[in-house]
Amino acid sequence: MEVKPLTGGLGAEIVGADIRREDQFDAIKSAFVEYSVIALRGQSVSPQEHLTFARRFGPINVNRFFKPVDGHPEIATVLKEKDQKEAVGEGWHTDHSYDQEPAMGSILHALEVPPHGGDTLFVSMAAAYEALSPTMRGFLDDLWAVHSSRHVFGASIVDTEAAKSGRLGNAEAATQDTLHPVVITHPLSGRRGLFVNPVFTTEIKGLSADESAAVLGMIYDHCKQPEFQCRLRWQVGDIAIWDNRATWHKAINDYHGFRRLMHRVTVEGVALTR
Ligand code: SIN
Image (cartoon, rainbow, N blue to C red; front, side, top):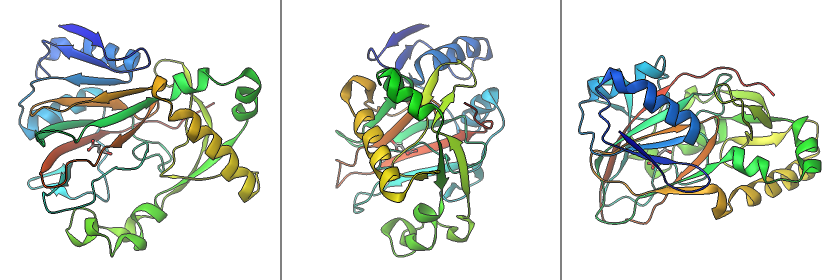
């Protein structure tokens, strides 16, 4: 098994791994903690084997809003049909940040990919935090932010293509609002990193609406710099694991006219602390 870093900021590709092999799990998990995003090539595994691998990280966190895979309620379908315009996860986000104990990470298995495009971009929230000035880090260290699912998965989605096509549903379950520190200490690595994201974070507690928007806007512009990013080009059979406590991600919607089908399993996390 060979671990090959994708960029200086985050991400690694592991060659020669088989997620079905229990004896390789510790090495895969160590790489996950170190690089935050792991790509395992050529894993043409069954939904059951996908779930077995995910359970080695921890219990499964079932997504409330994505359409489940037939016969596998713990696996979410991430699908864009060739005649659809919107992709799942197009905005920069951290999965499940609206939960009190945000999911540890997500494990995506590529089943059908377009001939070009459909990549996923990731940002290292620790690298972004470390690149801020000590004065800005000190200011952000004491802040808390509100995260919510309501405006993303609630009643407003009912008229969207995703809801009409059945890709997203259960809008009445979008009732989560929670507070997390703006800067967290990663539960596994101990590294400090930013924990706010453009899709689910709604405001910084204790600031006026204008101040909150300005501070979040500054953080978001800073995080989007290419120095903190890596890009995953998918091939059928790839499995990627990303750490929600250390990254943002974004699905690039540049493959109109082609189908892209992924299975996503999300693993339970813990409450986050400063
Ligand atoms: C997601 O946001 O979980 C989906 C990412 C992707 O499809 O690339």
